Image (cartoon, rainbow, N blue to C red; front, side, top):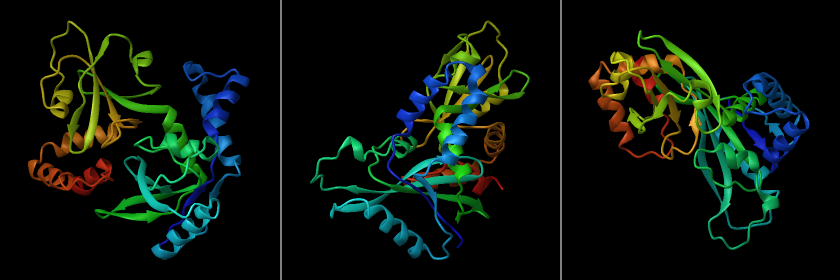
Length: 293
């Protein structure tokens, strides 16, 4: 094992970002500002002193012990217990957050102890207090293995909290990746689309937006993925697994993989068997890659 972690000291990063974007006269509601805002977010992460990359460890016990010591050194609470929650996953990697929490609720938690980066980034939107660590893993030969994390990974996590990618499926089968920000994509796909019910397929919680059109042409790819007859264009977005509280990115590559694996019902069955084990850290991207190859 060669793995490290990113230690994120408690911070008010989202309050800072809001204030600083106002100062720079930049708005996430203005698509013309997207590139400038992403450059700003990248510089912010790379320059922040409260985001620290650890040394590389070869033993799992050593890396976890080192992180726990770093976290608990910042608080005198003796009732802390470790907990892990998913942050983000995509076609290639996944990120998990390890933090300490007081399950006894014996002390009043103060706003000054809140870690904004961790609270907004995790899939459950749990309030994260004090310092925490983020671990990165990748998928290899059907297994998940620890990997080294960098500040560039933290940039990716921060940006995807604001900007999300979905896939527009055209009637001719063409797939078009579209980026949007906020809680709905209507500003970029237009108001002709209507949000449909979330559809779960092999662990992916897909949120489709179906075009309200007089065109009666059946969208074959969208129909295959969603498991029902769909007419017109469809924009597919992705909600994080288990909680559906956050948007994640989904790209054309995953749409194509979903189309392919739907042809092999034996593989689909195996994925659902794993999902039935009710692992709170289910990562649909890993399962898809595990059984697709």
